[in-house]
Image 1: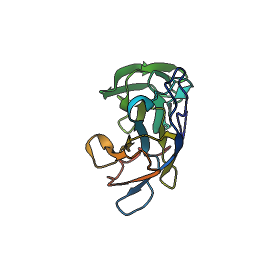
Image 2 (image 1 turned 30 degrees about the horizontal axis):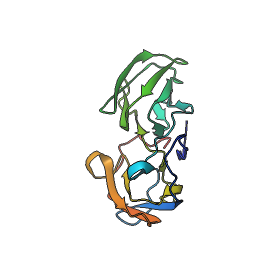
Image 3 (image 1 turned 60 degrees about the vertical axis):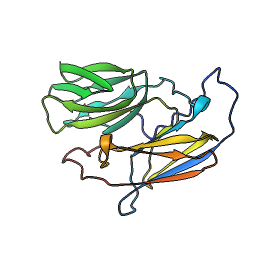
Image 4 (image 1 turned 60 degrees about the horizontal axis):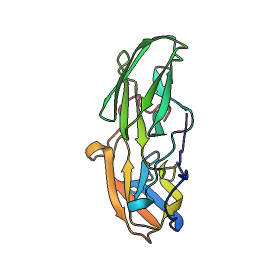
Length: 207
């Protein structure tokens, strides 16, 4: 399980370096309250783009008839394990464009692994327990993080170049739960005000 991920990973063989500085992003709801666990991704222009490295161990457990954690961020190319810690069988699946898969019935203390090779949001479900839901965000940018309790994300090494910021949250009222805005080269702060819909019952137990 990886929380508050920030894929600040250098890539060998990069072209001439750009001056980096901190970029802070705040996400609030329609009433101005901080939005926690929104996924913010920075896409710099041109040759400043850097993919993340598919390193680390990523786990989405099934425990107490829920996926834990509710939200996971992984880099493109990551393998995610799905251990079953419940005394009942699970049947994990996704119909998402970024990754369609099906893990047919597996029992307690068994695990299955899925390789995530495309960027995008992957919604998870269980074919037996309808109340189970979760999300995996597969990112193709090393500048990806989730907002804290204050609705803030900071990228300490953002390139000093024009860029695009994306923000995603499962309950944002927008196509695909996502909004974006342009960032100027000298811009050091940005903010999003989003409209949220209420979460479904029983989906936030380990968020």
